[in-house]
Image (cartoon, rainbow, N blue to C red):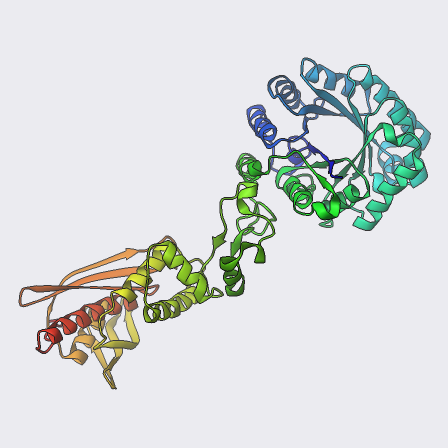
Length: 514
């Protein structure tokens, strides 16, 4: 039987404790509305006692956002509990969440309390909160570094005092999944009245184990997970809501548990929180990272094109992430390249595809990201390539403020290779004059146009030239990350077209540069 796990979202409280992630009231209300659309069960809207802004955010969210239970955090102090109630009253469904530490490390060095004093205060504040609301949650802070017998004694007492949820906090991210699962099982066995409360878990990510610990707790019987969007939170953050939810959804066979989350809203929620907090999501972040459904490896791309399940364990649209993104780069395979070209509307021959694929590989070694415009430029050049009377083998150009531009050009012409050195008014002029001398062709350069295919200094540059002879025009195109090389390719492309046209007329090619 599949259990339903309660998702307690603390993005607006613990998440806001990330350095630099402070939000104003309007921003908090906006995120709370999106969390309601996402389907979270509980929104911890803030810490009402901490500031007027937090108080107002809790008050407005409690009164304006429908669906989830709205919660305010409160230390185990009368003023905190009272202030939480003042912010929450009038809300449709509200909860007060109070806490005090139970670890000797905290009690001795921070709180200056004995165990007996901390227990008495915990009970007193749970009772005080129950005087205001029926739904009270209690957290033993630093529970995973607390002595187990004392921890269970505190839990039994606060449940007897009226706590409906007891939240086992791994406050400093110290526990391992095995330890944390064992602790949850021990609590179930050693707290006599535990059946009267939901066991919740709140895991921090200091060792990168927050999601693993949360899932281990669910497997051991926990019924609520406290988490944040994108895993934001104090220090290394909290368990990421999207990871916990999708792990449960994807591996029901293991956890026999699921949530009420509308997972299609995950990506939208992630983007909203990232934009408002200014905290970017790392590209390789699970579920919501830019690369979460992107594939560059040729082996992976080939499998995906045959069957998505080969390399994707969940559909990108199931989390609102659109579709699988095939990234073309130096690790890509021919199959993915062909599929992408067909998606763009191109149907190259096998020869054209092979030549274009080799150019893709060379380009991918030169720049980090290949754009669709790059692909279209490469494939149109190959599909529009005439019989090559002249093929560029190598090009070397020297130029500068105190140097006469000089080009060394090597061309393949039929069965032979020729090479020459020439000078010009600039690097392109030097290259063109040298090519003209090698091909022994003459024409007028009517136009020369350069444009960048995409942004960045490593962008593929495209050159278009028009050459004229006897009143007839021929246009050539060339592309490369080196604009001089692109210029040479464009000029040779035009010469080859002119040569092919002359051959069809039964004459000799005469076009070239003068």
